[in-house]
Length: 180
Image (cartoon, rainbow, N blue to C red; front, side, top):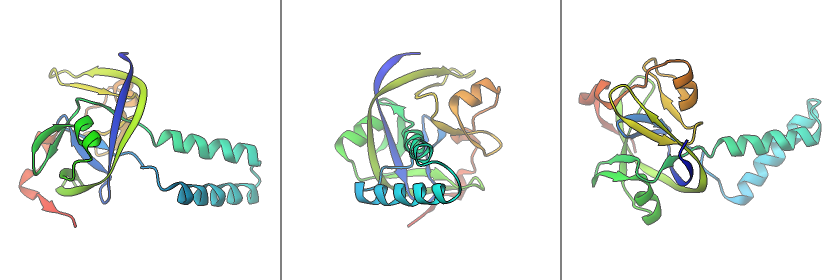
């Protein structure tokens, strides 16, 4: 446990992931506009109450889902951009840099996609995970990464289960395509 640090995330439209420190990280859900989020909240609560869930519980569940969407990476997490090469996610977010990143689809194909949204998630608890090869991941304990079998799981769940992370070097890089 490293303590409270400022953390960041990106939203990638099509594949919902990006390469971070040579691993495949799931992007956050992204905060929609306030009015749109309120609309979804109302739909969720209305549907829940019609199915027997109390309004208090439905509201609490929706708030938990929003909180779940805020998993993040530390400032210095390296993101591979097409235009500028490796860059710290914190710098990309702070400067709102328009760039294209690498992402991976469910078949393991590598794509390039523009960043759709930038997210500074403020101060959160950050943990450091040291892998067998010496690689380091600094993230909230619920940030999702791809395992070698293609699942997107929270980093804590991956370590607790003794699972392996899929790395960039394990991907078929000859299969790079651009998603528009």
